[in-house]
Image (cartoon, rainbow over all chains, first blue to last red):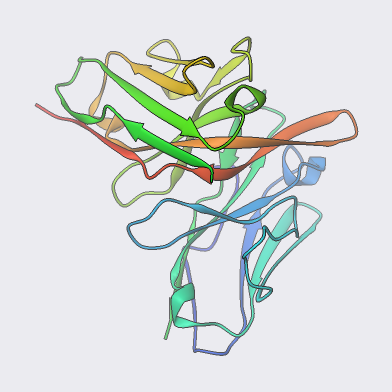
Length: 112
Length: 125
């Protein structure tokens, strides 16, 4: 079981805004460890979507944005598109894991 | 162009062994931490192991400690995962990923900016 909890699923109509939460604790996100987000399209490898809380790699549309506050982080997708239907994972570190990373439980985004 | 290509997966019986390889190209391999991440069928991502640029530090998830060994050959631009005493619960797609280092104050960690396509390991009799 992961120390980072995400909702199993979120959905929205094309053009809408959806948000995915990543809830941690005082030993990970709350301990000022940064959060990164990955998108996994069906049948493919994960792809870096957001790094260090809110930064987008080159080529990632600005429809995707990240934020972090307290012991949680969020990924927002505005102007939802059909090609955004995928699984999304947050990733951080935990002070109890000594050099080992941890992924969130994952969220399936469905475009209605 | 950065490329990571895994190989070595397959079907193995419980208790058996397998060695995964990850061939890297398009970047200076010896400058990066490397990580193995796995994904069981229909499940989420699980961080498995990582190794420092020069191989001097290695970390493992508790469930594979003592059974898996991560190593690298910087002369061959290759990452390896030796998996022994395999169990059914090790069945997964195994990805290698490049870790890009960032630091906040005195604390440094990684995010995974490039991933391979994965190699399927099936442990079954």
